[in-house]
Image 1: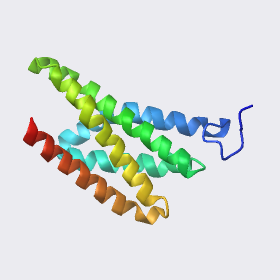
Image 2 (image 1 turned 90 degrees about the vertical axis):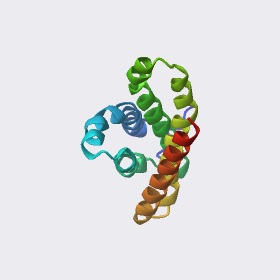
Image 3 (image 1 turned 60 degrees about the vertical axis):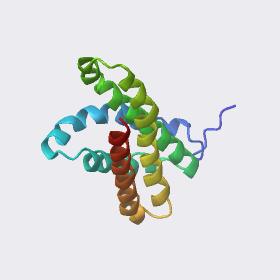
Length: 150
């Protein structure tokens, strides 16, 4: 029998939260395209947007395990969705290997940054700025590294 207590991360009371985390992961990259174009700062825009999802969606879950699992799911879906949005550019460049590279590197990087923000802010939401700063640092270093090897 399925445990439906508040501590169950998949209980009926948490269904809306999980749905919001999944939808945010799939849709947020598309919403951020005009913001990134306007600000010309992909890293800052993406990490701040992801932190908002962590604070207002993921932190509604009852346990640390549920929060970390939701952070992983959200981050992976965010990276996958962003990679799918780049498919048009990849097709125009004529090099489909770039898509594989995005899946191999970019998707886990987005999951990592969300997990870092979540873990660092679990003791207190007041620690979220440190998590955001670290996520921005990871994302920035990742971009520098990727550009240097490809």
